[in-house]
Image (cartoon, rainbow, N blue to C red; front, side, top):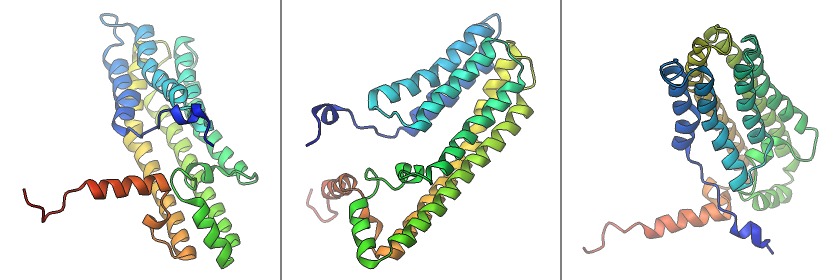
Length: 255
C-alpha cells in the first residue's frame, strides 16, 4: 500500500511560464533596472533578485519532495552566484561556477551509467512517464533487453553531451557579458543580462536536445516492442488522456 504521507503529497505539475517568470525574467529585471543607488542599491538588488529563483527552487524541493540531484544542484548554483556577488570575489569565479554546475551534472550522468540507476532512467525512462513494467515485459519476451540497454547507454552519452554544451556556453556567456568587478552596479546589470540571454542561447537549445533524446528513446521502444506511444504511457497519464477525450463533447450532439 502507498504510505498516507505519499497519498497526501501534492502532485508536481510542470509550470514552464511560472518557472520562466520567477527564475529568469523577474531576477533579470531587478538586477538590470533596480541596482542603482536611487533604487535598491547593488547589494539589495542582488539579494532580492536571486531570492526569487532560490526561493522558488526551495519551495519546489520542500513542497513536492523533489530532492533529486539536479534540483539540489540548481539551488546551490543560485546560492553560489549570490555569494560571489556579496563577497565581491573576482568575476572570473562566476564563469567557473557557471561552467562547473552543468559539467558536474554531465559527469554524474556518465558515472551513473556504471550503477544500477542511470540518470537517464531516472529522468526519462521512469514510471511517471512510461509504463516501464509493460515495456520490460515485452522486451524480455522478445529477448531484446540487452539491445535496449545498449540504446539506454547511448541515450545517457547523448544526455551528458547536452550538459557539456551547457557548460561551454555558460562559460563563454559569463566571460563575454560579465566583465565588471563583482559587488558593483555594473556587475549586477551584466549578471541580469546574462541570465536573460542564457534562456534563448542555452536553455532552449538544451531543451531541444532533451526532446531529441526522448524521441530517440521512444523510437527504440517502438522498434523493439511494437507499441505506440499511447500504449506505453504511464497508467496515470493514459487515464488523464482518456478523461480528456471523454470530457470533449462530440461534434454531432444537439445543443
